[in-house]
Amino acid sequence: MKIVKLAISNIAWDSRLNEEITTLLKINNVEGLEVAPTKVISDPEIVEKAVISKYKSFWENEGFKLIAMQSLLFGKPHLSIFGDRISQKHTLDYLQKIINMASMMGTNVLVFGSPKNRYIKDISDNEAYNQALEFFHILGEMARKKSVSFCIEANPVAYGCNFLTGTLETLEFVKELNHPSIKLQIDTGTIFINNESPHDILEKSYPYIGHFHISEPFLNLIGKENHSKVAACLREMHYDGWLSIEMKNNLLESDVVAVKQALEFVANTYFDIKRGDQ
Image (cartoon, rainbow, N blue to C red):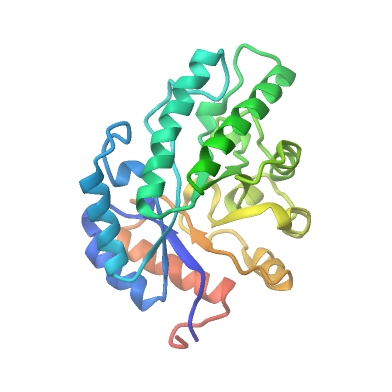
């Protein structure tokens, strides 16, 4: 039995392990890769076309599709979706470079989490909400021109966020924004840490889902939380999009061991595949 629509984020391993990880992913029938920009080039503000092309070619030649990008504002704590127009323009200008990079890699989904870059400081909640609507409308237009979509992810308070911290709250924002290039990102780590109902979340948000992360709170090793209810809901709703494993690296004695363990758990839980069945 073949796992389809399964991807994994490259934040789960050190880039020096790419070749070893590639073999492991193939064995487990992973077909997609989610990419953090800074795992490709050190500074996305300097678009190195040759480096991006080489990275794209490596993974595509190995049979993988680059399906999404995440950690879009990593290393840019000074950028924010809030503030005056000049401040917002700096953030939008940087995200335009991320959009261009995604376009070069053939990636059409951009996950917008970035809890620290959407922290409300010196304005009211109402003003922040209105600023965010304007910001994401502009961002949506930028994305539309390059045929990509931004998927807004709820970030819990525990992650240092105070704007769109719950999944249903984020869903309502996406619905009010009503832009074809702005969709909802589902993250199981958020569902678990907020003690949200998987069935309620997926039933209400299904038409608006642009991407889906299988994750744990604080990006810990996949398998500590009970994912069975989430998996059952996805089967019930006949979800046919990508499921992307998201976890940090340096969790076990080696990243290869951690990725292997996560893949086995996901195969068993989300695809009902036991070891040896593949």
